[in-house]
Picture: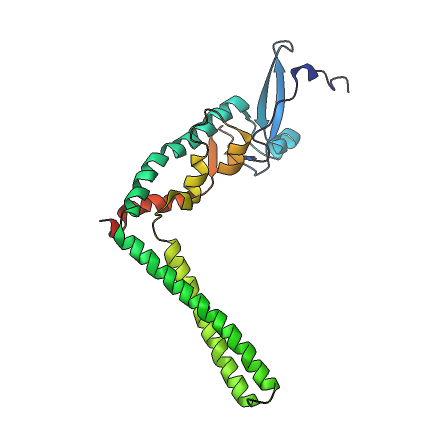
Length: 238
C-alpha cells in the first residue's frame, strides 16, 4: 500500500498493444509492467508473462519479457514491410484491370449468379402458389407432393451451383484495389510514421513474444494479399 500512487507524477501512458500481446510459450496474454529506474527519474514499460510472474518456471518458461519501445519498433517494421508492397500490388491490379479476358469471365460468372438467384426466387413463388392450389383442391395431394419434391431438388441444385460460382468468382484476381480487404486496410496507414492503437486494431491479429524475445506478428488479411500477387502468374495475364 505504501507504493500505491508513488509514481503518479509520470502520468498515464496509453497501452496501444492492449489485448494483442500473447506469450509465445504458454498462450497467456502478456501484462504491461511499469518499470521505474534512475531513482524514480525515468520510466519504461515491459511486457511480461503473468503466468511466469506468478508461478515462475512452474507456470511458464518465458522469463524474459520485452520492452515496449523495442516491441513498437519490431511491429512497425513488420507493418511497414506490408505497406511497402502496396506499390507492387497497385501495378498487379492495374494489369488485371486492363485484361479483357478477366473482365469478361467475371461478367459471365456474375450473370450466371444473378440467373440462379432469380430462379430460386421464382421457385419460392411457385411453391407458394402450388400450396394455395393444393389447399383449394385444385391439385391432388399426389401431384402436390411430386411437384414440391421437384422444386426442392431444383432449389438444392441451384444452391450448390451458386456456392461453386461464388467460390470461382472470389478466387479470381482483383481488378479494383478497393475490393481487396488487405489493400484497403493497409493503404489507410501507408503515410503513418509511428504506431497507433487504431493501426494495430485494424492490421494486427496477434503478437507473440517468445522466451528468446523473438516476436511473431500475425497480420490481418494475408489471404487477401496473396490473392493479389498470385494474379501475376494467372494464365489470363500471360
